[in-house]
Length: 497
Image 1 (cartoon, rainbow, N blue to C red):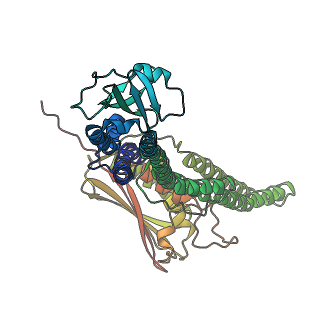
Image 2: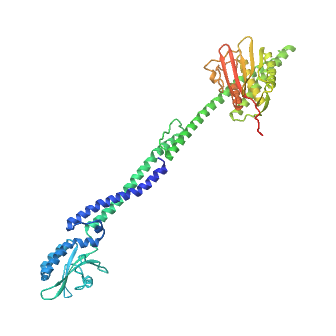
Image 3: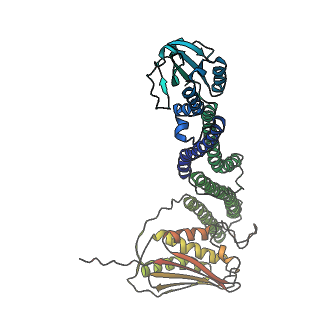
């Protein structure tokens, strides 16, 4: 789950859950306290409306005693002059957070309160001011804040009086106080519980991938790339972990490539050093022969000089190959593409190669099956390097008394295909897929008589790939090898006017 979705859900939960649970708590505590009020004060049909209105409750929980007093007043008002009777009523009222006051001819006759009631007594309604039909009582505000129920009396001696049930509004029922307290505690508990659960839910969703991410970071810090950061999920942190895993894989690939690159560089240096040592040793030997006077005839001198020249060319070729390899490695091969006529270009190449191969006693045949106006877009110098490297590789591995190389150029639709075949010792099937890899040699022996840097065919493949072509080979051990490569033909694109 995405972090944004998780936070949105948390937002609605933190609003709805507390409201819902507070509502359930309100109903539960409310029902409990209403039953408690009904049982404690002998009140019927206590509702949430009366529970929320303290005056209505106060009116109800003294109602039974009020009815009893009114009945006594109608039968014999003088009973309210009996202090024992009044004390009994007052004790009962105290259980309901109320007390009794009796007034006779405007003078306080009895007070069931232990406190000072002077201010309250002045605020009490006068005789006859109270509506007898109303049983709900009246509220006296100002300084006293009390709820009053009044019964007017006429005693047997003709004097007038009033009896009052006084309930202090501040002295609310313990059930109401308990209800309010329980609701406050419940609301606080619900909020804390909801917050803790949401925090645990959100934290749990992000902590696990973060711990894995931290461990992965520590591994990379320690140089260890051989681990897998496996995190499932669709949230942003899981996506970050997957990106981190992809970064780790690329770092590992880069590290492996660097190790391989360093290995290849060392191998290249070793190959070049080995391959340069042979011609340098030969040049040094022939020069010493000249200096020592061994070449004492014009024929010997000519042979020595030609050998030195050939060995110098061999060293120059190796150095050029190394220089070109460095350009391949940094993708800085200098291409100059142009339109090349296939017949003219390959005819000139074969003419140049023929002289060299003839000098080495190798027979060269050439067949061109394309039309005379066929052209390709290519770099003439680099394609010449391709042909030269392939021919050089063929010459290097010729093992027959009579060497043979055939070059064929064919038209294959949108491409021209060049085939270079030799009758050398061939390549094993297991080696064939890897001959275009850098530094790969079918004969890995350092004492191989053929030598070579091991990058010739990799250079060939790079050039052909950069031309948008393809190169491959087929071979048979003991019979020879055929190298194939294709170049796209140049075609005029008609413009509709």
